[in-house]
Image 1 (spheres, rainbow, N blue to C red):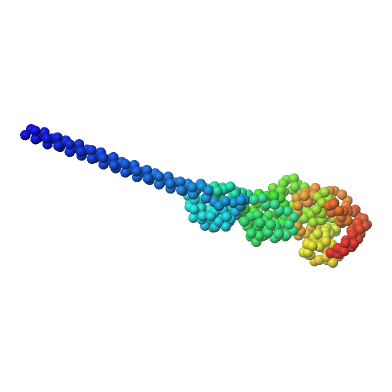
Image 2 (cartoon, rainbow, N blue to C red):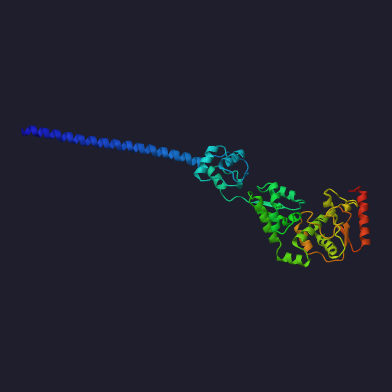
Length: 373
C-alpha cells in the first residue's frame, strides 16, 4: 500500500513538473511573439518615420537652374499659394506640400520672397515663406505727371496704379497735408526707398508723407522762409528749374533769375516750360509766339507769380538750388548753341539788349536745323 502511494506521489510530482514546464514554454513563446511584434512595429515605425522625414527634409523639390522670386498677394490662401509655387516650377506635388505646411503650421503669408535654386526640401521652402519678406528698392525721379509716377510705383509694390492714384489724390489725405490737387506731386521727393512688396496704396502715401517731413528739415524750412516761399512753392519753382536745365552747376543761377522776377512787382515769370506744360505737347523743342497765348493758369507769360502747382517732379538738386539760389543781377537767359560732348547750357543776360543778342544766335541755329516747333 505504501509503495502504491509512493508511486502515485511520484506521478503527481511529474505532472506538476510537466505543468510548470509547459507554463514556462508558453511564457517564453508569448514573450517571443511580443518581442517579434514589437520589433515589427519598431521597424514599421522607423520606415514610416523615415518616409515622412524624407517628405519634409528630403530632396523633394524639382531641380532649378536659377533662383525664383515669388509675389504672394495679400489675402492668398494656402491653395492659391500652392498653385503659384507650382506655376513657378518650385513645387511639383501639391498634396505633399500642403501636408508639410499643415505639419509646420504654415497657413500663408503675403509678400515677395526669393527662392534660391539650392532649396530642395519642403522644410527649407516653408521656412523661407514664413520668414520676414525681402524688401524691394523703389527708386523714382524725373516723372512729369502723377499717373506716370503711379504706374512706375505699381511695378514695385502690390498696389495697382489706379488704387495709387486714388490714394494720392484723396481729398482727406491732401487736406491733411495742406495740399491742393494740383500740388499733389510736391509730396514725392525723388530718392530710393525700401519697402515691402505687399505695401498697399494707403501705406505707401503715408510713408511718402513721412519721408516728405523728413526731407523738409529745419535747415531747408529756414531757407524757404527767408525766400518767403512755402515748401510747395519751392518745389513748384524747382520743377521749372529742372525743366529749363539738366546741367546741375547752372541750376542755382537759373533759380536766381526766376527769384529776381518773382521779387519784382509787375514782372511775370515768363518761363517757357510752363507754356509747354499748358499746351500738353511735351515733344515741343521750340516755343512759338502762338504758344505764349495759350489760355491756362500754368502759362506764366499771361499770369503773374508761380503756376498753380509743379509742372513735373522736382529733383533734389533743383529744390536745393532754389533754396540756395545764386544772388546776381541776371534777369534773362536763353539756350546756347550746343557744343558736341558738352551738356546743354544757357546764356545769361542782365538786360533786354544782351538777351536779344543771345536769343538771335540761338534762333538762327534752330532755323539752320529746321527746328520750328
